[in-house]
Amino acid sequence: MEEGLPGSRLEGIHLEGPCLRNAGGMTESLLTPPDLPFFRKLFREAPGIVKMMTLAPELPGACDLIELLCDHGITAAAGHTSCSAEELRNAVAHGVSHITHLGNNFEGDIRCNQGRYEHDGPLLECLVNDALTCEVICDGVHVSPELIKIFYRTKGLGRFAAVTDCCAAAGLPGRSFEFPDPAGTSQRFEVKRKALYIAGTDRLTGSLLSMNTAYVNLRKFAGISGEEAAAACSVIPRQIAGIREREEEFTIIDDDGKVRKIQIQQ
Image (cartoon, rainbow, N blue to C red; front, side):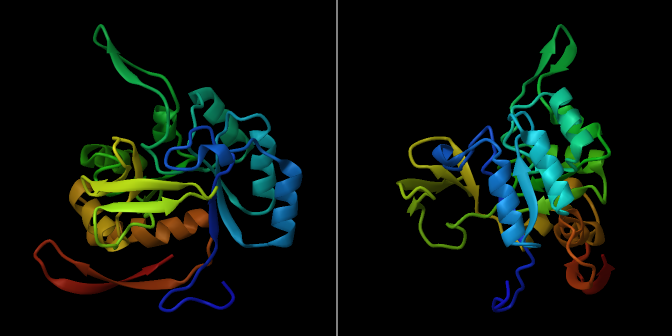
C-alpha cells in the first residue's frame, strides 16, 4: 500500500475469513472460530489496513468480533454462513452491515409446499433488511442473470455492489491449472462454463470475471443505465468499505453504442 502498484492504488484489505462456516473454494483446514486476542493484536499492529471482514454470524463469539470490527471502523460482513434469519438479524443488531457475494455459500432451501413458498436460511432477510448492503458476483455463473436482476431490483442503487471474486486463473491461457492452496497443498482446477472448478467435479471455486465485463453484464442482466452500473462497480463498493471520497470519471457505452464519459462523485 505504501509503495503503490503500477496503474492502480491499493486502498485496503478485505479479510474473507478465516471465521467462516462454509469453505466454498477456500481451504477448509484453515477456517477457525473467532479469536478476539488475535484480532485485537492484528488491528492494533496494522491500523487502517483492514477495511472489511467477512464472518459467519452463527459461530461462537461472532458477535463480540463484530463489535470489535465496528470499534475499529471496519465493515462487518456476513458470508460463507449457514445462519438462520434470526441469527442474521442478531448480527445486524451488533453491527453487521454487509453481505459478501450474495447467492453463494449461503445455505438454505427455497421450496414450494402445497403452493406456499417456504425458505430456510438468511436469503430473504438479506433482501428485505434495508440495513444490509450486498455484493454479487456478476458473471452469470455464480449467480444466474435472473437472480442478479431480482437482487438489484430488491436492494436498489446504493445497496448493491458488483464484484468479480476473481481468482488466480483469470487471464491465463489454457483450461487446466494447478495451484497451491494457502496451506501449501497443491490442487488441480479446470475452466468450464466460463468459471473455475475443482478438477473432475462440479464444485465451483472461482470466477474469471474482469470488472469491465461485470459492468457490461450488470447492465444487460439488470437492465440498468451506464451510470447505475458504473456506481455499482466502483462508488458503492468504496462506500461500503468506508474508503475516502473522490470524483471518478468513467467511459461508458450507451444503448445506442455511443461512447461517452461521465463523472460520478462518491
